[in-house]
Image 1 (cartoon, helix red, strand yellow):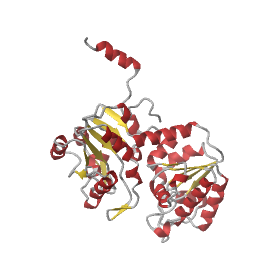
Image 2: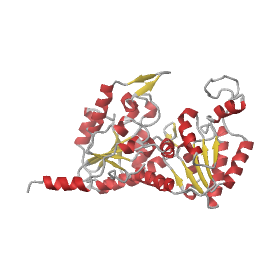
Image 3: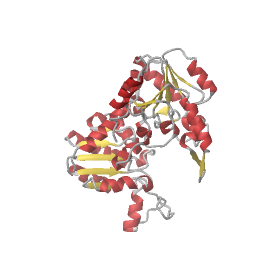
Image 4: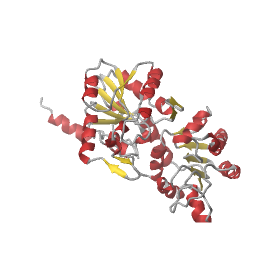
Length: 385
């Protein structure tokens, strides 16, 4: 995955333009209180750079949570707009929707230099293309095309700075029909880091931790990592499938292929597993970690993940290379106040996994290509003098 031939925000003239920036502000929150604002902070360089280029207006677009294609008051972005206003020291106005005549009118008649935040993209089924009610209800192709067209009307230039969502083939990621589609500074930083890291041979032993929920989400990543790492530690809910298949262990309510119900649930790794993980980590020179090891939204079941966070920080202090693949694990790392000790903390776990698997990110593929020397020569020859 490379940005070498793709447009960057620095390749595009933003002066007097309506700049539509896709960001990923899907931040952890409770009752509209943000628990970790790192995803927001990570985009500030792009927003500030765009402002310095004297645009007509900046329009930010993001999703939050899983409203399932319906307006959900709890997932409105009002508290995100307030956080942005505070961080930028400039008012960021939340618009009542992400598409439609009213939104277009506000943007087109805006005073110069304003920043708007569109309402939650996922309030429309057409953003993801489906909603779930125990089964998938798909949006019609016609409605998806209209939604994408309406989003595209809002900007003259499109900037993708949503690394955490670049692996999704969602409308705001792969469906924007604006001629100039460029990477933001955050997206460029993430892609360039992984490109450089994966090109070089890692210091060995090379260890990976893969946690999280269902194995279906990460089986390709596990398969890919088996050829790259010396040690692979599997935690979280997905470990239950391995325990069931390899040891015929009673894993209670945890989800496996046959879904056997029992009274007990597997919710975290215990003290013995934490010790085992730490002993393996102590021998590694390169560590990459993606996905929590327990149900971390409950403090009682976050102990395993927190213990291993402390371990990787300890080993980073000793000179080992540690890479965190975003998500809940990244949040816990930032909570320690020691994230700067690690080599890299990514802003998206799903996108990180796609890169590790060697797959292209749809959001990067959708960016405009830079003009080649031949293209420029053809343009010059076509000019009437």
